[in-house]
Image (cartoon, rainbow over all chains, first blue to last red; front, top):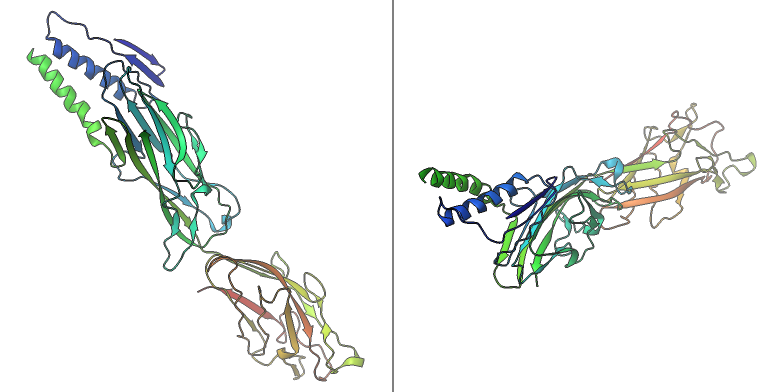
Length: 201
Length: 201
């Protein structure tokens, strides 16, 4: 087993074969080694990005997490002051949103994952009774903390490409969102959501 | 060996607790391709209601519009142009900015329903003061009257609740009758002040 830690920002390791022990059953040692690898992963939970290269025969798997752990759906809120409405002063949401994606496949059959976002299907609609006003998601952009999942802006598209990654890797970044505030818009509370899709064709 | 088993059990009990809290908006997929996992992110924008209204000069000053018919044309029905106003010639800027719904503009005055007086018991009705708009279809003027309360309702410029207008109103003296000599009205005196109020529901 080879383990390389680079300042706890990126971690890469390879697992080719677990060595045997004369004092302990082989499966216990393998289990412990796997446990240690999990520990390293958890220990680096504050890393900006983590890259895994798995050489064993992994079952193809992808996962995505958007927002805070333990919450159903994270909400990003912008509050515009009355003196700022539509004056093109960007409004930045407090805090950042964690986005983490992972793709695992065997080295013999690598896969490529594509991260897209749908910002068209569920636009920001005014919840005031009788209002038909809405704000397009193209008024919202984001800045990536590390750039692993890059900065950009919503394009009001169903399948807007964000990034693509080869197996087997896990990327995490933190996005800070900003509302462009270019429109004089009806008063009210506007609600909508985007859908991130992490997929392998 | 029991201690090894105990270590393994405790390790996976503790380590398993973290990924076991797998967040609601964290999804995964595994097995044969294609694979797809999606996660949503909510957005909310809070837009306060605002109403900004300006008649005449900015910066809090109040304009005075004066009419001075000559002796030769007293009461001959020749309209007399005004002087004063921030745009001069009896013309004032009208700025209307709101995102809170249909605006209603209502003028009132401090004449107690008697019109402009000269301090000697004589009066000129507000019916003698005419108002025209630079764009009557967009920003109609409310007709002045002794009692006040005649309204105008400029239609929203966007959707049902957004208004963003800058036009001008021009005042003239109708000069339909001969009145006793004197100075009628004035700066907040002798019934000479008109107050316009813009309101939304």
